Length: 94
Image 1: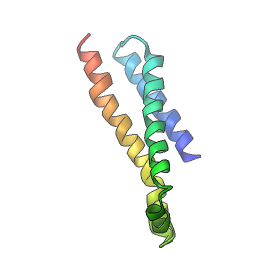
Image 2: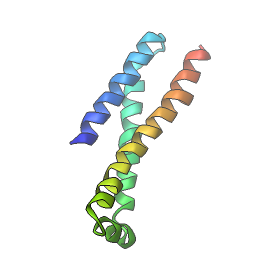
Image 3: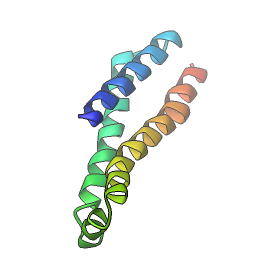
Image 4: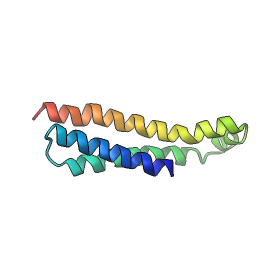
């Protein structure tokens, strides 16, 4: 649930930035932002299927929650990197 809300927020963030900077194709940038977020979260979930990570999930409640939401944090970090080094560089190079 939280991943979906964050993906929408990332898409809106990218779209608004692209519109404000008058970059062509703001919908493309919004889709790329949400896509990189979801790809990172998907890779984190896939990585968590390993037996080592499964055992970490069940050691304590706090560690399990941390590991679960770390995927969302990594997704936001990946989106921030794309925003900073993709969208901003594209806008400056116009």
